[in-house]
Image 1 (cartoon, helix red, strand yellow):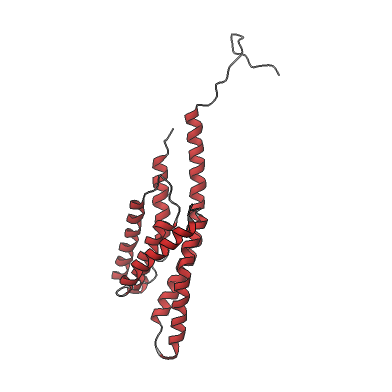
Image 2 (tube, one colour):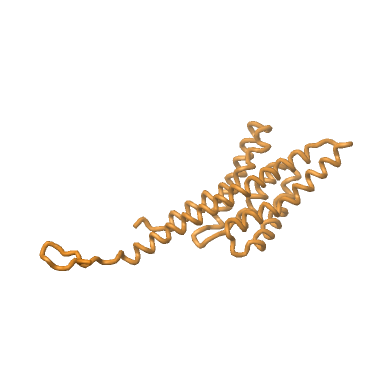
Length: 197
């Protein structure tokens, strides 16, 4: 194969791409893959979380008498589903210690949920799943627990505002929000960490 020559007849030498440029491209590709995994985990875990919301809300709202057994069953299924939500969040997002993170998330959920549920059940679910999601989803070096907690706090405040103006809408208004909010702030932190060039 004849080598390429420049206008002076000398053989052209092609310099390889700078190492820093290749590293940046690699980082961006890895960030996109991690972000895609995170959103798949968010979607699956959110579906389970919304199901759990419905079980708890209808379970606690069901009257006494013959319906007590039905209410107890719904609440029991809801409680059993809580660890599953966090297991899906941890494993699908490829948390390096998935089951341990899911167990810690379930513990935090209980610590947050129990006291708040005495006065506001929907808010307790939003706060509990939000705080659990902070530790359940994979957290890379660029991600921040503080920003995740801020995202959860915003979801809690939003739920309170909706409940203030429309109690009926406020019941499930915050159900799909906590995990998505965590993924959004993680994506923002990841983009800030990757240089532009």
